[in-house]
Image 1 (cartoon, rainbow, N blue to C red):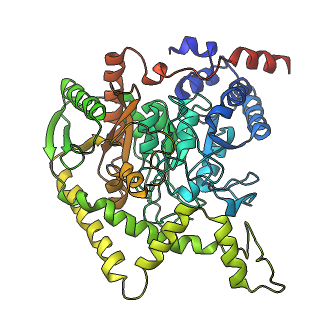
Image 2: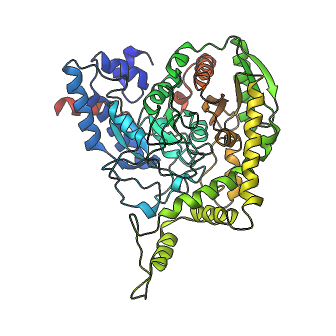
Image 3: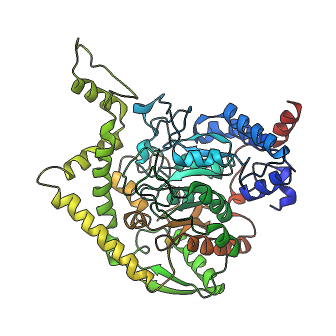
Length: 520
Protein backbone atom coordinates (compact mmCIF):
# COMPACT_ATOMS: atom_id res chain seq x y z
CA UNK A 1 0.00 0.00 0.00
CA UNK A 2 1.38 3.39 -0.99
CA UNK A 3 1.24 6.34 1.41
CA UNK A 4 -1.29 8.05 -0.88
CA UNK A 5 -3.64 5.09 -0.43
CA UNK A 6 -3.71 5.19 3.37
CA UNK A 7 -7.03 6.99 3.65
CA UNK A 8 -8.85 4.41 1.51
CA UNK A 9 -8.70 1.85 4.33
CA UNK A 10 -7.14 2.91 7.59
CA UNK A 11 -7.12 -0.62 8.98
CA UNK A 12 -5.00 -1.97 6.10
CA UNK A 13 -2.27 0.67 6.36
CA UNK A 14 1.00 -0.14 8.09
CA UNK A 15 1.93 1.62 11.32
CA UNK A 16 4.68 3.50 9.48
CA UNK A 17 2.18 4.72 6.87
CA UNK A 18 -0.30 5.75 9.55
CA UNK A 19 2.42 7.59 11.47
CA UNK A 20 3.42 9.51 8.34
CA UNK A 21 -0.18 10.42 7.51
CA UNK A 22 -0.84 11.49 11.10
CA UNK A 23 2.27 13.65 11.18
CA UNK A 24 1.20 15.38 7.95
CA UNK A 25 -2.34 15.82 9.37
CA UNK A 26 -3.83 13.93 6.41
CA UNK A 27 -5.79 11.89 8.93
CA UNK A 28 -6.52 12.20 12.63
CA UNK A 29 -5.82 9.74 15.43
CA UNK A 30 -9.54 9.70 16.25
CA UNK A 31 -10.30 8.56 12.71
CA UNK A 32 -7.65 5.85 12.84
CA UNK A 33 -8.67 4.64 16.28
CA UNK A 34 -12.39 4.62 15.48
CA UNK A 35 -11.75 2.69 12.27
CA UNK A 36 -9.97 -0.04 14.23
CA UNK A 37 -12.64 -0.09 16.95
CA UNK A 38 -15.27 -0.58 14.25
CA UNK A 39 -13.17 -3.33 12.71
CA UNK A 40 -13.10 -5.02 16.12
CA UNK A 41 -16.89 -4.86 16.29
CA UNK A 42 -17.12 -6.31 12.78
CA UNK A 43 -14.78 -9.30 13.11
CA UNK A 44 -13.71 -10.08 16.67
CA UNK A 45 -16.80 -12.13 17.42
CA UNK A 46 -15.36 -14.58 14.89
CA UNK A 47 -11.69 -14.29 15.89
CA UNK A 48 -12.04 -13.81 19.69
CA UNK A 49 -8.67 -12.08 19.91
CA UNK A 50 -9.64 -9.48 22.54
CA UNK A 51 -10.51 -10.17 26.15
CA UNK A 52 -11.26 -6.51 26.86
CA UNK A 53 -11.85 -3.61 24.46
CA UNK A 54 -10.87 -0.15 25.71
CA UNK A 55 -12.94 1.96 23.31
CA UNK A 56 -13.51 4.94 25.59
CA UNK A 57 -9.90 5.12 26.77
CA UNK A 58 -8.46 4.67 23.28
CA UNK A 59 -10.59 7.46 21.84
CA UNK A 60 -9.73 9.75 24.75
CA UNK A 61 -6.02 9.24 24.06
CA UNK A 62 -6.60 9.78 20.33
CA UNK A 63 -8.42 13.06 20.94
CA UNK A 64 -5.65 14.27 23.23
CA UNK A 65 -3.01 13.47 20.61
CA UNK A 66 -4.98 15.28 17.91
CA UNK A 67 -5.25 18.34 20.13
CA UNK A 68 -1.53 18.32 20.91
CA UNK A 69 -0.67 17.92 17.24
CA UNK A 70 -3.04 20.75 16.26
CA UNK A 71 -1.33 22.97 18.83
CA UNK A 72 1.97 22.41 17.05
CA UNK A 73 3.54 20.16 19.70
CA UNK A 74 6.38 17.88 18.62
CA UNK A 75 5.21 14.29 19.14
CA UNK A 76 6.83 10.83 19.15
CA UNK A 77 6.87 8.92 15.86
CA UNK A 78 4.00 6.56 16.68
CA UNK A 79 1.84 9.11 18.49
CA UNK A 80 -1.77 8.48 17.54
CA UNK A 81 -1.17 4.98 16.13
CA UNK A 82 -3.38 2.53 18.08
CA UNK A 83 -2.07 -0.68 19.61
CA UNK A 84 -3.33 -3.83 21.37
CA UNK A 85 -1.67 -5.14 24.54
CA UNK A 86 -1.25 -8.78 25.55
CA UNK A 87 -3.19 -9.46 28.72
CA UNK A 88 -0.07 -10.52 30.61
CA UNK A 89 0.96 -6.86 31.01
CA UNK A 90 -0.36 -4.83 33.93
CA UNK A 91 -2.55 -1.94 32.77
CA UNK A 92 -3.69 0.63 35.32
CA UNK A 93 -7.46 0.87 35.31
CA UNK A 94 -7.93 -1.98 32.81
CA UNK A 95 -8.50 -5.67 33.59
CA UNK A 96 -5.42 -7.91 33.52
CA UNK A 97 -6.30 -11.60 33.69
CA UNK A 98 -3.40 -13.45 32.01
CA UNK A 99 -6.11 -15.62 30.44
CA UNK A 100 -6.85 -17.13 33.86
CA UNK A 101 -9.93 -17.34 36.07
CA UNK A 102 -7.75 -16.80 39.11
CA UNK A 103 -7.27 -13.17 38.04
CA UNK A 104 -10.79 -12.65 36.71
CA UNK A 105 -11.76 -9.02 37.35
CA UNK A 106 -8.37 -7.91 38.68
CA UNK A 107 -7.59 -4.28 37.77
CA UNK A 108 -3.96 -3.34 38.47
CA UNK A 109 -3.17 -0.08 40.31
CA UNK A 110 -0.10 0.49 38.13
CA UNK A 111 1.19 0.13 34.58
CA UNK A 112 3.89 -2.24 33.37
CA UNK A 113 6.91 -0.31 32.15
CA UNK A 114 6.13 -1.35 28.56
CA UNK A 115 2.59 0.02 28.90
CA UNK A 116 3.93 3.26 30.39
CA UNK A 117 6.23 3.58 27.37
CA UNK A 118 3.26 3.10 25.02
CA UNK A 119 1.31 5.81 26.85
CA UNK A 120 4.30 8.15 26.86
CA UNK A 121 4.53 7.61 23.09
CA UNK A 122 0.89 8.69 22.70
CA UNK A 123 -0.40 5.35 21.42
CA UNK A 124 -4.13 4.68 22.02
CA UNK A 125 -4.57 1.27 23.68
CA UNK A 126 -7.40 -0.58 21.91
CA UNK A 127 -7.65 -3.34 24.49
CA UNK A 128 -6.15 -6.49 25.98
CA UNK A 129 -5.54 -9.59 23.86
CA UNK A 130 -6.33 -13.22 24.58
CA UNK A 131 -3.59 -15.67 25.57
CA UNK A 132 -2.91 -19.13 26.92
CA UNK A 133 -3.35 -19.05 30.69
CA UNK A 134 -0.24 -17.48 32.25
CA UNK A 135 1.41 -17.81 28.82
CA UNK A 136 1.50 -21.62 29.06
CA UNK A 137 0.73 -22.98 25.62
CA UNK A 138 1.31 -22.88 21.88
CA UNK A 139 -2.24 -22.45 20.60
CA UNK A 140 -4.23 -20.07 22.86
CA UNK A 141 -6.54 -23.04 23.53
CA UNK A 142 -5.50 -22.95 27.19
CA UNK A 143 -7.14 -19.55 27.76
CA UNK A 144 -9.80 -19.78 30.44
CA UNK A 145 -11.95 -17.52 28.25
CA UNK A 146 -11.94 -19.67 25.14
CA UNK A 147 -9.52 -19.96 22.22
CA UNK A 148 -8.66 -17.31 19.68
CA UNK A 149 -8.91 -18.29 16.02
CA UNK A 150 -6.61 -17.89 13.07
CA UNK A 151 -7.93 -15.30 10.57
CA UNK A 152 -6.63 -17.50 7.72
CA UNK A 153 -8.91 -20.36 8.81
CA UNK A 154 -11.22 -19.92 11.78
CA UNK A 155 -11.00 -23.63 12.56
CA UNK A 156 -7.25 -23.36 13.18
CA UNK A 157 -5.09 -21.99 15.98
CA UNK A 158 -3.39 -18.56 15.79
CA UNK A 159 -0.41 -19.80 17.78
CA UNK A 160 0.36 -19.27 21.43
CA UNK A 161 0.71 -18.15 24.01
CA UNK A 162 0.20 -14.81 22.27
CA UNK A 163 -2.36 -15.96 19.74
CA UNK A 164 -4.59 -13.01 20.55
CA UNK A 165 -1.92 -10.48 19.66
CA UNK A 166 -0.99 -12.24 16.41
CA UNK A 167 -4.66 -12.61 15.48
CA UNK A 168 -5.55 -8.93 15.99
CA UNK A 169 -2.67 -7.89 13.74
CA UNK A 170 -3.44 -10.53 11.10
CA UNK A 171 -7.16 -9.66 11.05
CA UNK A 172 -6.45 -5.91 10.78
CA UNK A 173 -8.04 -5.12 14.15
CA UNK A 174 -4.85 -3.33 15.21
CA UNK A 175 -1.75 -2.24 13.29
CA UNK A 176 0.50 -3.24 16.19
CA UNK A 177 0.38 -5.37 19.32
CA UNK A 178 2.67 -6.28 22.18
CA UNK A 179 3.62 -9.86 22.97
CA UNK A 180 5.79 -11.84 25.33
CA UNK A 181 8.07 -14.70 24.37
CA UNK A 182 9.12 -17.34 26.91
CA UNK A 183 9.81 -20.15 24.44
CA UNK A 184 8.47 -18.79 21.17
CA UNK A 185 5.19 -17.10 22.11
CA UNK A 186 5.81 -14.10 19.82
CA UNK A 187 7.59 -15.88 16.97
CA UNK A 188 5.45 -19.03 16.61
CA UNK A 189 2.15 -17.10 16.44
CA UNK A 190 3.73 -14.76 13.88
CA UNK A 191 4.71 -17.74 11.74
CA UNK A 192 1.25 -19.32 11.64
CA UNK A 193 -0.60 -16.04 11.01
CA UNK A 194 1.69 -14.52 8.36
CA UNK A 195 2.85 -11.65 10.57
CA UNK A 196 6.15 -10.36 11.99
CA UNK A 197 7.20 -10.96 15.59
CA UNK A 198 10.41 -10.15 17.46
CA UNK A 199 11.84 -11.48 20.71
CA UNK A 200 14.47 -8.89 21.71
CA UNK A 201 17.66 -9.75 23.59
CA UNK A 202 16.83 -10.81 27.15
CA UNK A 203 16.84 -7.62 29.21
CA UNK A 204 16.34 -5.39 26.18
CA UNK A 205 12.70 -4.69 27.13
CA UNK A 206 11.68 -4.29 30.78
CA UNK A 207 9.84 -7.14 32.48
CA UNK A 208 8.51 -4.88 35.25
CA UNK A 209 4.74 -5.29 35.34
CA UNK A 210 4.72 -8.44 33.22
CA UNK A 211 3.03 -11.21 35.20
CA UNK A 212 5.92 -13.66 35.36
CA UNK A 213 5.84 -17.16 33.94
CA UNK A 214 9.56 -18.03 33.96
CA UNK A 215 11.64 -15.03 34.97
CA UNK A 216 14.87 -16.12 33.29
CA UNK A 217 13.10 -16.77 29.97
CA UNK A 218 10.29 -14.18 29.62
CA UNK A 219 10.84 -11.32 27.17
CA UNK A 220 8.36 -8.77 25.80
CA UNK A 221 8.52 -7.72 22.17
CA UNK A 222 6.62 -6.30 19.18
CA UNK A 223 4.00 -7.92 16.93
CA UNK A 224 3.41 -6.25 13.56
CA UNK A 225 2.67 -6.77 9.88
CA UNK A 226 5.99 -5.43 8.54
CA UNK A 227 9.59 -5.49 9.70
CA UNK A 228 9.77 -1.68 9.82
CA UNK A 229 6.62 -1.52 11.97
CA UNK A 230 8.15 -4.03 14.39
CA UNK A 231 11.31 -1.92 14.57
CA UNK A 232 9.36 1.27 15.30
CA UNK A 233 7.49 -0.48 18.15
CA UNK A 234 10.70 -2.13 19.41
CA UNK A 235 12.18 1.33 19.98
CA UNK A 236 9.13 2.42 21.97
CA UNK A 237 9.06 -0.71 24.12
CA UNK A 238 12.78 -1.02 24.77
CA UNK A 239 15.32 0.76 26.93
CA UNK A 240 16.86 0.52 30.39
CA UNK A 241 14.52 0.30 33.37
CA UNK A 242 15.86 0.60 36.94
CA UNK A 243 12.73 -1.22 38.14
CA UNK A 244 13.94 -4.41 36.39
CA UNK A 245 17.19 -5.82 37.77
CA UNK A 246 17.79 -7.76 34.54
CA UNK A 247 17.31 -4.71 32.28
CA UNK A 248 20.29 -3.92 30.02
CA UNK A 249 21.77 -0.51 30.80
CA UNK A 250 22.41 0.43 27.19
CA UNK A 251 20.60 2.24 24.36
CA UNK A 252 18.12 0.32 22.21
CA UNK A 253 20.00 -1.11 19.20
CA UNK A 254 19.57 0.85 15.92
CA UNK A 255 16.75 -1.38 14.71
CA UNK A 256 14.85 1.23 12.68
CA UNK A 257 17.95 2.20 10.73
CA UNK A 258 18.65 -1.48 10.09
CA UNK A 259 15.09 -2.09 8.85
CA UNK A 260 15.36 0.84 6.46
CA UNK A 261 18.80 -0.29 5.23
CA UNK A 262 17.73 -3.87 4.38
CA UNK A 263 21.08 -4.81 2.85
CA UNK A 264 22.56 -8.28 3.42
CA UNK A 265 25.46 -8.04 0.99
CA UNK A 266 28.51 -9.65 2.58
CA UNK A 267 26.61 -11.06 5.56
CA UNK A 268 27.29 -14.65 6.59
CA UNK A 269 24.10 -16.55 7.37
CA UNK A 270 24.11 -19.90 9.12
CA UNK A 271 21.46 -22.55 8.52
CA UNK A 272 21.12 -24.53 11.74
CA UNK A 273 21.48 -28.24 10.93
CA UNK A 274 19.53 -29.35 14.01
CA UNK A 275 16.50 -27.11 13.29
CA UNK A 276 15.11 -28.80 10.22
CA UNK A 277 14.55 -32.15 8.53
CA UNK A 278 12.45 -34.82 10.18
CA UNK A 279 9.22 -33.54 11.73
CA UNK A 280 9.03 -30.42 9.56
CA UNK A 281 6.11 -30.13 7.16
CA UNK A 282 7.22 -30.28 3.49
CA UNK A 283 5.65 -26.92 2.68
CA UNK A 284 7.44 -25.30 5.61
CA UNK A 285 10.77 -26.69 4.43
CA UNK A 286 10.15 -25.64 0.83
CA UNK A 287 9.34 -22.03 1.73
CA UNK A 288 12.36 -21.91 4.06
CA UNK A 289 14.73 -23.13 1.36
CA UNK A 290 13.30 -20.58 -1.07
CA UNK A 291 13.88 -17.80 1.47
CA UNK A 292 17.49 -18.86 1.99
CA UNK A 293 18.00 -18.85 -1.79
CA UNK A 294 16.61 -15.31 -1.94
CA UNK A 295 19.14 -14.18 0.65
CA UNK A 296 21.92 -15.67 -1.47
CA UNK A 297 20.59 -13.78 -4.50
CA UNK A 298 20.85 -10.58 -2.48
CA UNK A 299 24.52 -11.12 -1.76
CA UNK A 300 24.57 -13.07 1.49
CA UNK A 301 26.81 -16.09 2.03
CA UNK A 302 25.01 -19.10 3.47
CA UNK A 303 26.72 -21.92 5.36
CA UNK A 304 25.44 -24.84 7.40
CA UNK A 305 26.11 -24.60 11.13
CA UNK A 306 25.81 -27.38 13.70
CA UNK A 307 24.56 -26.68 17.23
CA UNK A 308 24.45 -30.23 18.64
CA UNK A 309 23.10 -29.33 22.07
CA UNK A 310 19.96 -27.84 20.52
CA UNK A 311 18.68 -31.43 20.47
CA UNK A 312 18.33 -31.22 24.25
CA UNK A 313 16.75 -27.74 24.35
CA UNK A 314 13.15 -28.93 24.57
CA UNK A 315 13.84 -31.25 27.50
CA UNK A 316 15.86 -28.62 29.37
CA UNK A 317 13.25 -25.95 28.75
CA UNK A 318 10.40 -28.09 30.10
CA UNK A 319 12.27 -28.50 33.37
CA UNK A 320 13.44 -24.90 33.77
CA UNK A 321 10.14 -23.27 32.83
CA UNK A 322 7.87 -25.35 35.11
CA UNK A 323 10.32 -24.95 37.99
CA UNK A 324 10.28 -21.17 37.71
CA UNK A 325 6.53 -21.14 37.05
CA UNK A 326 5.76 -23.16 40.18
CA UNK A 327 7.66 -20.56 42.21
CA UNK A 328 6.20 -17.51 40.45
CA UNK A 329 2.60 -18.72 40.64
CA UNK A 330 2.79 -19.41 44.37
CA UNK A 331 1.71 -15.80 44.95
CA UNK A 332 -1.80 -16.60 43.72
CA UNK A 333 -2.92 -17.72 47.16
CA UNK A 334 -6.45 -16.20 47.44
CA UNK A 335 -5.23 -13.99 50.26
CA UNK A 336 -4.27 -10.70 48.58
CA UNK A 337 -5.97 -10.32 45.21
CA UNK A 338 -7.76 -12.24 42.50
CA UNK A 339 -10.18 -15.11 42.90
CA UNK A 340 -11.18 -16.45 46.34
CA UNK A 341 -13.25 -19.62 46.70
CA UNK A 342 -14.43 -20.90 50.08
CA UNK A 343 -14.60 -24.66 50.70
CA UNK A 344 -18.12 -26.04 50.98
CA UNK A 345 -19.31 -27.35 54.32
CA UNK A 346 -16.52 -25.72 56.34
CA UNK A 347 -17.61 -23.05 58.83
CA UNK A 348 -14.17 -21.63 59.62
CA UNK A 349 -11.79 -22.68 56.82
CA UNK A 350 -8.06 -22.33 57.27
CA UNK A 351 -5.90 -20.30 54.89
CA UNK A 352 -4.55 -23.56 53.45
CA UNK A 353 -8.05 -24.86 52.73
CA UNK A 354 -9.08 -21.61 51.00
CA UNK A 355 -5.86 -21.59 49.01
CA UNK A 356 -6.32 -25.21 47.91
CA UNK A 357 -9.89 -24.86 46.62
CA UNK A 358 -9.16 -21.47 45.02
CA UNK A 359 -6.13 -22.71 43.10
CA UNK A 360 -8.06 -25.81 42.05
CA UNK A 361 -10.92 -23.69 40.70
CA UNK A 362 -8.80 -20.85 39.32
CA UNK A 363 -6.02 -22.68 37.49
CA UNK A 364 -6.55 -24.69 34.31
CA UNK A 365 -5.18 -28.16 33.58
CA UNK A 366 -2.03 -26.97 31.78
CA UNK A 367 -1.08 -24.61 34.60
CA UNK A 368 -1.62 -27.35 37.17
CA UNK A 369 0.44 -29.77 35.08
CA UNK A 370 3.42 -27.41 34.97
CA UNK A 371 3.18 -26.42 38.63
CA UNK A 372 3.28 -30.09 39.64
CA UNK A 373 6.17 -30.84 37.30
CA UNK A 374 8.13 -27.79 38.48
CA UNK A 375 7.54 -28.48 42.15
CA UNK A 376 8.77 -32.05 41.65
CA UNK A 377 11.88 -30.90 39.77
CA UNK A 378 12.77 -28.49 42.60
CA UNK A 379 12.06 -30.93 45.43
CA UNK A 380 14.68 -32.23 47.80
CA UNK A 381 16.61 -35.11 46.28
CA UNK A 382 15.63 -34.26 42.71
CA UNK A 383 16.90 -30.69 42.26
CA UNK A 384 20.37 -31.65 41.02
CA UNK A 385 19.09 -34.50 38.87
CA UNK A 386 16.50 -32.39 37.06
CA UNK A 387 16.62 -28.60 37.44
CA UNK A 388 20.37 -28.51 38.00
CA UNK A 389 21.05 -30.74 35.01
CA UNK A 390 18.75 -28.64 32.81
CA UNK A 391 20.71 -25.52 33.73
CA UNK A 392 23.92 -27.24 32.67
CA UNK A 393 22.35 -28.08 29.32
CA UNK A 394 21.32 -24.43 29.06
CA UNK A 395 24.98 -23.45 29.38
CA UNK A 396 25.93 -25.86 26.62
CA UNK A 397 23.27 -24.39 24.34
CA UNK A 398 24.59 -20.87 25.00
CA UNK A 399 28.07 -22.11 24.10
CA UNK A 400 26.71 -23.57 20.83
CA UNK A 401 25.38 -20.11 19.97
CA UNK A 402 28.72 -18.49 20.81
CA UNK A 403 30.64 -20.88 18.57
CA UNK A 404 28.13 -20.41 15.76
CA UNK A 405 28.37 -16.63 15.91
CA UNK A 406 32.14 -16.88 15.53
CA UNK A 407 31.41 -18.23 12.04
CA UNK A 408 28.30 -16.30 10.97
CA UNK A 409 26.44 -13.02 11.57
CA UNK A 410 22.99 -14.57 12.05
CA UNK A 411 21.36 -18.00 12.16
CA UNK A 412 18.18 -19.01 10.32
CA UNK A 413 15.67 -21.85 10.56
CA UNK A 414 11.96 -22.47 10.04
CA UNK A 415 10.11 -20.76 12.91
CA UNK A 416 7.62 -23.58 13.50
CA UNK A 417 7.69 -27.14 12.17
CA UNK A 418 4.16 -26.96 10.76
CA UNK A 419 1.53 -24.50 9.64
CA UNK A 420 -1.42 -23.76 11.93
CA UNK A 421 -3.07 -26.97 13.10
CA UNK A 422 -6.77 -27.39 13.73
CA UNK A 423 -8.32 -26.45 17.04
CA UNK A 424 -8.40 -29.48 19.31
CA UNK A 425 -5.90 -31.55 17.30
CA UNK A 426 -3.17 -31.47 19.98
CA UNK A 427 -5.08 -30.41 23.05
CA UNK A 428 -4.99 -33.90 24.57
CA UNK A 429 -1.36 -34.55 23.66
CA UNK A 430 0.92 -32.17 25.64
CA UNK A 431 4.12 -33.49 24.06
CA UNK A 432 2.83 -32.87 20.53
CA UNK A 433 1.87 -29.35 21.61
CA UNK A 434 5.29 -28.71 23.16
CA UNK A 435 7.05 -29.72 19.92
CA UNK A 436 5.64 -26.63 18.21
CA UNK A 437 8.33 -24.59 19.98
CA UNK A 438 11.25 -26.86 19.12
CA UNK A 439 12.95 -24.27 16.89
CA UNK A 440 12.23 -21.21 19.03
CA UNK A 441 13.17 -22.45 22.52
CA UNK A 442 17.01 -22.32 22.16
CA UNK A 443 16.95 -18.51 21.80
CA UNK A 444 15.15 -18.11 25.13
CA UNK A 445 17.51 -20.46 26.93
CA UNK A 446 20.50 -18.42 25.70
CA UNK A 447 18.87 -14.98 25.89
CA UNK A 448 19.63 -14.12 22.24
CA UNK A 449 17.21 -12.14 20.04
CA UNK A 450 15.02 -13.74 17.38
CA UNK A 451 12.52 -12.71 14.74
CA UNK A 452 9.94 -14.50 12.62
CA UNK A 453 8.84 -13.10 9.28
CA UNK A 454 6.44 -14.64 6.74
CA UNK A 455 8.20 -16.90 4.23
CA UNK A 456 5.19 -17.68 2.04
CA UNK A 457 2.34 -20.16 1.92
CA UNK A 458 2.67 -23.93 2.17
CA UNK A 459 1.53 -25.65 -1.01
CA UNK A 460 -0.32 -28.46 0.76
CA UNK A 461 -2.73 -26.24 2.74
CA UNK A 462 -2.25 -22.63 1.57
CA UNK A 463 -1.42 -21.45 5.10
CA UNK A 464 1.42 -19.11 6.16
CA UNK A 465 4.89 -20.32 7.04
CA UNK A 466 7.62 -18.42 8.86
CA UNK A 467 11.39 -18.12 8.77
CA UNK A 468 13.27 -17.42 12.00
CA UNK A 469 16.34 -15.20 12.21
CA UNK A 470 18.54 -15.35 15.32
CA UNK A 471 21.34 -12.89 16.21
CA UNK A 472 23.95 -12.54 18.98
CA UNK A 473 22.87 -10.91 22.24
CA UNK A 474 22.44 -7.10 21.95
CA UNK A 475 22.82 -7.29 18.15
CA UNK A 476 19.08 -7.06 17.54
CA UNK A 477 19.61 -4.76 14.55
CA UNK A 478 20.90 -7.73 12.53
CA UNK A 479 17.44 -9.31 12.75
CA UNK A 480 15.92 -6.24 11.15
CA UNK A 481 18.55 -5.99 8.43
CA UNK A 482 18.01 -9.59 7.32
CA UNK A 483 14.27 -9.51 7.96
CA UNK A 484 13.68 -6.36 5.90
CA UNK A 485 15.86 -7.58 3.04
CA UNK A 486 14.01 -10.89 2.90
CA UNK A 487 10.66 -9.13 3.23
CA UNK A 488 11.43 -7.04 0.15
CA UNK A 489 12.59 -10.07 -1.83
CA UNK A 490 9.47 -12.04 -0.86
CA UNK A 491 7.27 -9.11 -1.80
CA UNK A 492 8.72 -9.27 -5.30
CA UNK A 493 8.46 -13.08 -5.31
CA UNK A 494 4.78 -13.16 -4.24
CA UNK A 495 3.73 -9.92 -5.90
CA UNK A 496 1.94 -8.67 -2.77
CA UNK A 497 2.22 -8.91 1.03
CA UNK A 498 1.46 -12.40 2.32
CA UNK A 499 -1.44 -11.12 4.41
CA UNK A 500 -3.16 -9.73 1.32
CA UNK A 501 -3.80 -13.34 0.32
CA UNK A 502 -5.74 -14.11 3.52
CA UNK A 503 -9.52 -14.54 3.24
CA UNK A 504 -11.62 -11.51 4.21
CA UNK A 505 -13.54 -12.05 7.43
CA UNK A 506 -16.00 -9.20 6.96
CA UNK A 507 -16.61 -6.26 4.65
CA UNK A 508 -14.76 -3.01 5.16
CA UNK A 509 -16.23 -0.84 7.88
CA UNK A 510 -13.81 2.03 7.47
CA UNK A 511 -16.11 4.22 5.38
CA UNK A 512 -18.78 4.02 8.06
CA UNK A 513 -16.21 4.66 10.75
CA UNK A 514 -14.93 7.79 9.06
CA UNK A 515 -18.50 9.07 8.54
CA UNK A 516 -19.25 8.43 12.21
CA UNK A 517 -16.13 10.32 13.30
CA UNK A 518 -16.93 13.30 11.09
CA UNK A 519 -20.49 13.40 12.36
CA UNK A 520 -19.46 13.25 16.02
